[in-house]
Amino acid sequence: MQNKLIQYFSELIVLSDEERQDIEESMVVKEYRKGDYLLKEGQIASDTYFVMKGLVREFILLEGEEKTTNFYSENQWIISLDMTAPVQPSVHNWVCAEDCVLVAGNERMSIELFQRHPRLEAVSRMVMEKTFAAQQQQLTSYITDS
Image (cartoon, rainbow, N blue to C red; front, side):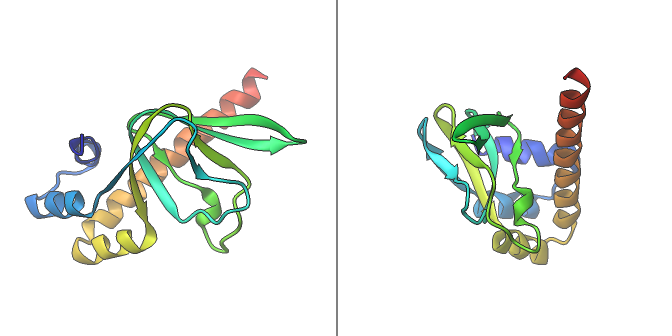
């Protein structure tokens, strides 16, 4: 299962054996049950996630009603834009729509990897670009299909 993240990175860049090993050693794989929350509105988002198995639903509460804003499935990143400076409480919720296996990471872990392997910072930028492009495409589709 851990090879899914390595495969994902390998599609972006050729990893050295040392980079691959350090990524695998730094991975924190967590299992969640359907209904478990990764983030609730008002909390500070500190972790990012890579979905290895399962489905996570993102939603906001609008006048007491849940409004789904996104779904994250296998091989997708869950990243909150609220994590950028200045850090703000989250306006959305992340809940497991089914049992999930996720890789969890945070800024400290990323910085440690980047210090040992500066090339991985470029990979991180590529991941962010792909994530933002997908979100922009989703927003464009929502606007044009409405």
